[in-house]
Every structure is written in C-alpha cells, then in structure tokens.
Length: 90
Image 1 (cartoon, rainbow, N blue to C red):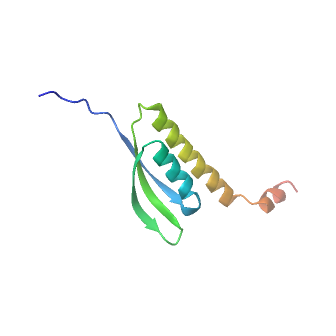
Image 2 (tube, rainbow, N blue to C red; image 1 turned 180 degrees about the vertical axis):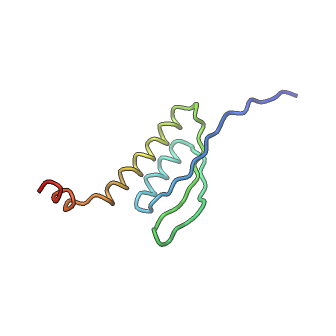
C-alpha cells in the first residue's frame, strides 16, 4: 500500500458583511477554495466563514489576499467619512 503525501492546508475565519458577500463568493468559487459558513450575525448583517487554502498554491494565496483586501477596503469605507477628513484639515 502506497502512502499518498498530504498537502498542507491552512484554515482561517473571516467575518464577511453581506454588502460584499457576492464578491467574496465569486472569488471563492472561481479559485475552487473550500469554505463553510460558521455563523450568521443578523444584527451586523454578516457571515462568519472559514476558508481553507493550500498555501503552496499561488492561486490560493492570491485569492485569500484579494478577499482580505476587499474586507479591509470595506472596513475603511464604513469608518471613514468625508466630514471627518474635512475636520482634520481645519
């Protein structure tokens, strides 16, 4: 009997706002990433998902970086407002 080498897998959890969920799902499906919904937060309109990647695959690493970038940009969008920036320059 031959032993099949096991490829290392990295798993991480991410809170995904419903506003960007379709963009994230598109990335997950286009890159054949394994993911599961861990929880739903109705008050914040978000999902907690667990994403598993094979870190040796550049495609998987880039997809995860893309997802993290979208979440970072969305967080900045929610917290920054034009009025708060204008007040800083006075």
